[in-house]
Image 1 (cartoon, rainbow, N blue to C red):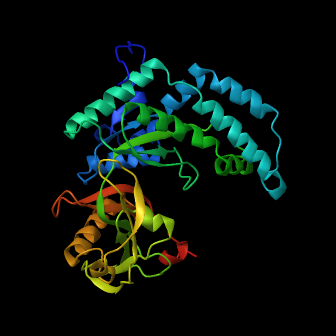
Image 2 (image 1 turned 90 degrees about the vertical axis):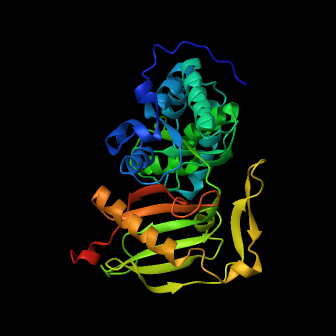
Length: 346
């Protein structure tokens, strides 16, 4: 257990850390898109996991108070590499090793450390667990899919603190540095928020879209899912069920249910961690969602679309520890990228 008791009267707590339930989409610049959208979902009455969020101000304070900001500025002031040259990728990789090593060697300022520990302790208490498994995810003020890193199955105060810093350091990974260099943005500074969210042990999980991707139809939405955690879908390794649902009647007009031989599942609820395992034969050829779950998810996705006022791309999961309809939770929502041609604008 890490000691508490440090005064934090100088902290602007409301801009540094909040519960998910206390964040809204208007807080995007303070906490980043993922955190703001998750809080907005909660505020709209949608089912989301418990958790707390850490603002961009914490990233800024961490770099400044530890001296990392000045050291990074000095290093990148002489850094020269062409982001469009394959020969220069090694220079960006070397910069990543330096910057991430520097950031991760720094200790979180005491006032911020105390706040994070308090919120994690309160989260554990609210869920009636001594230590809760959480995911620690980045939340940038603008969408940069795949650039930063996510850490699953983090438990305990020290590990939560460690992985928050690792998310901050991931803003200096090679992908992020190359992208910023191509965009003409500073390499030494890229503040992000962090979401610390209860891990959901999912029976099945996936993504729902307001409109069927790759189609010019305005009448159908799409749902994709797999057995186990949603990271299985993201990895591209597991087979995915698909439903194409009539937006007016919420009934599937067609579906694709392949044989699913693998699932990404929690290995041990006590030890944490997840792994790819063989799906038992009796589940390999059946859908990962029931007809009732498909309809409930389609209805919920359209409600999210209405709440945000635009088509949405929604990450969902079916919890193992709850019964329907409470078992359906939303993990994230973001605007769905729609071809202009879909609406006859091209």
